[in-house]
Image (cartoon, rainbow, N blue to C red; front, side):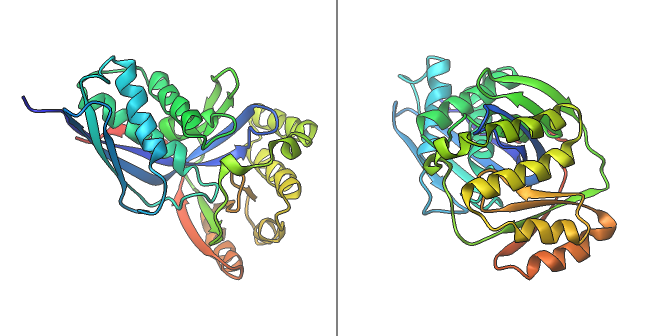
Length: 291
């Protein structure tokens, strides 16, 4: 008997509203990516995972995602799996690496089993796995939806409701300023972040009204202050002509959304700060099975 094997790809996402303070969030898709290859084995409960692009990182989220999918289809007593992931998304900088990996792994595992699930069911299995692996505070349902569906999503993370989806103008590009220091979401001081709840609620209302870039900048400044991050990268990006700029996730990366004609000058400004700058396009493509 040939055991199933499949590969899937999910794209990156960036924060508009970080849901830690209120449980409500918003995010948008970018064309960074994670690929996951899942091969079923006849060794039940044994899940071997390897992160090709960052071998030192924990594989617990990958293992829990595969386990969640196998349990969902009652196949956990029949199969184990070997999993490889590869990605161009830096880990633990606020760039949604966990949500994207969970989507790609969940999708590939479903395909390897030769089963099908509706999109939100796949997303939710990844969110469940993120809670299992303790890599999230809110479940990051907003990030997971933006990664899976592309475009902009506005969500209620606590109820796992997708409230609004929108497309974005194609002529915008995204620049990420990525410091070398990592910051893991599981280590966030949630009590401190919930103090800014009334301010974040204002930014969320802007996102609901379709003022995504105002919401992004406002959210970024609020969380930067609460987390003690220097706002100079954000302010310099805005000063250089960015449409919006702000902390991505819980940082330390900063997102700058820029029109094509201002991209070079904002890039030069960001490069004056320590760290690397990654350029990406907006993504409207859904996560998909490749083979």
